[in-house]
Every structure is written in C-alpha cells, then in structure tokens.
Length: 327
Ligand code: SAM
Ligand code: DTB
Ligand code: SF4
Image (cartoon, rainbow, N blue to C red; front, side):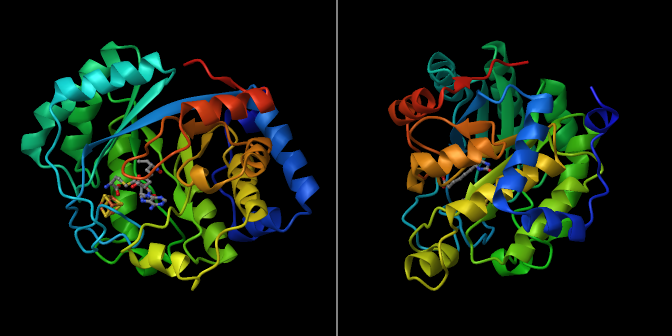
C-alpha cells in the first residue's frame, strides 16, 4: 500500500477539484478506476437498506424533502417506531442481502427521552450481524456518545451542497451546525457517512464546493452518499425540477461527480444513493466505472421509491457485479 492510500490527502484545494472535474472524460474515469482498484474490488458493491423509523412532520425546511412540515407533500407525520418492529425489518433486510441497516428519523435533532429506544434499536440490529447507521438530525456531544456506547457503527449527516449554496436549500440551520454535529460524531468514535444532493439547480462550482468541503474535513467520511434529487411534488426544489425551471442533472455530470469523489476520497465507500429509479442501466454502469461501490437496495428509500431487488439483480448480472461482504 502506498503512503498516499494510507493517509489520504485532506488538503485538496478548490482549484485542484475543479481541475479534476474539467479533465477529458476518459482521463477522469481512468484515474478514478486506478484509485478505486488500489483499495477495492472493482466488481463488489456494498448494499445498504434504509428504514424510516420516524416519518414526516419535520420542523426543518430542506427544500427537497418530502418530510418537512413546511411543505404540502402528502406525507403524514408519524411517531418513533417500536424497536421490535425495527429489528424485524432489519432481519428481513439481512435475509435479502443487506450488510448495513440505516435508520432515518425526520427530526431536527433527537430528544434525550428518545435515546433509550434508539440505543435498543442499535443493539438489536447489531446483534443480527448487520452494520448499523442512523440519521437523526443534529446531535449533541452526549447524544453521540450514547449512540457510540450502544455500538452505532455509522452516522449519516450530509453537507448537501457547497457552503455558498446551502442557504438556497435550507434556512432553518447553517453549514456550521452541520459541521458541529459531524465533529461530535467523530469525537464519539462513530464512523461518518456524509455526502450531498445534486440536480437541485446548483452550478458545477457548487458541486466542486461540496466535494472540496467533504475532502477537507479533518478526516474523510467513511461513506459518501451522492444523492440525485428525487423531485417530490410540493417541495420548492422538486417542483422547480418538475416544472422545468431547473434542468435535470445529466448522466455524464453525475459520473464526473462520482469520479471526483472517488479520486479525492480514495478509501471512502461512494454510494450512488437517491434517484436511481430515474437512471438507465447505462448511467448506473458509468457511475460504477467512476468508482461508486455502494447502493441502497430494496424498493423504498425513506419515503421515495428505489429500483428494488429484481431490477438490481438484473443490473448486477449485466455488469458482473456482486454484493460486498462486511469487512
Ligand atoms: N433528518 C435527517 C437529516 O436531515 O440529517 C436525516 C434524514 S434526511 C432525509 C437524509 C438526507 O437524504 C438529506 O440530507 C438529503 O441529502 C437526502 N435527501 C432527502 N430527500 C431527498 C430527495 N428528495 N432527493 C434526494 N436526496 C434527498
Ligand atoms: C442519504 O444520503 N440518502 C438517504 C440516506 N442518506 C438517509 C436518504 C434518501 C432520501 C430520499 C428521499 C426519500 O426517500 O424521501
Ligand atoms: Fe427534516 Fe432531514 Fe427532511 Fe431536512 S432532510 S426536512 S432535516 S427529515
């Protein structure tokens, strides 16, 4: 193993990241493949399964989100699920081939009174032999420590876009709030899952800013989800895309984004996350070539649909891909 792959760089400049984006496509994909193959089996794709453990009624106003109480999306507000029901869903996910189970709650942040139920979920899902991930909004230091103590493997908390564009996506919290939670998660010893959303009408410069922010965190996230906007009717960003006010992201620019994530964060799992239902097999193939090595499996994300097992099995067979074992 080379020195560079043991200690991936965290000093990427925006100009360097812009330079990667601007490479001829073949050169960019060749470099992404080289970097990918230095650390990973290029034909292995990790499978995560999502479950919404508390749906809707969220006080935040993220402009893409079906679960914000600020927008009329038709998603009713629910209560936190019972741990036994969550663990039963996790067992089914394991039987379907998942290696990681990601539990998402539509909260600004958890209440301390929820911690007992959350830690029971972590312990129960872990006991099944699955990796555990949660995404619950902002965490305080002591909440992160309590989840770590229960054995939580990953915490998902996305930066979503560049620092400059963030205020156009959400106004109920700041980039600095996001970074503070990420620091609490790291300090507690939980691995970080942090990425963003593209196709929201942002510029390439914003995609450059997002990847530069991720690749210059004190340590790279272990997982980097690249979500493509799922246009939810009733949300400002979803409606802008549906009404044709912003163009959909094209497959080549998506593959470029994945490739730059792979090159700048060589050891991270780069997840082709939301938005796969709208992608052709060819676009997804380009993303795997560009270094994506993780997906969400199953026919549902949190509220939105996902391709489902049959379509993904066909895709994997066409491309000679196989599920990655837990390390
Ligand atoms: N409430 C928590 C939070 O925001 O941190 C966790 C759940 S939130 C749904 C997790 C992430 O999913 C968001 O940060 C965003 O990146 C992504 N996401 C949500 N809705 C999406 C959509 N319609 N299309 C694409 N990505 C989306
Ligand atoms: C992430 O980056 N993507 C996932 C997970 N983290 C929690 C969520 C995608 C949500 C897609 C929209 C929905 O299902 O409502
Ligand atoms: Fe709430 Fe998360 Fe949706 Fe934002 S993305 S509105 S914080 S559930």
